[in-house]
Image (cartoon, rainbow, N blue to C red; front, side, top):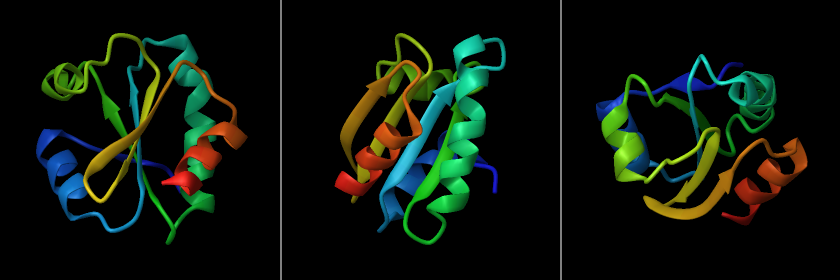
Length: 105
């Protein structure tokens, strides 16, 4: 199960209405480390289905979101719970570290 691609409108709705933890991967197609992390994000999306929401935001297509969340390097992973940002992970992370951040939310 691939992570959902979000635009600004979808993002705001998902974060505001979410009762489950939400993991958002800020990435770009030209970013090598983002490409390396992509399959891990998709695995987590499949494994966490029903327990958490996993989504992706292309920073080239959603510049407003990148500015709003002060994304200065990619990949950056944000974890939200009840509409609030609870964790920020920058750079390539292990599957275990990402999953632990989701479980902590």
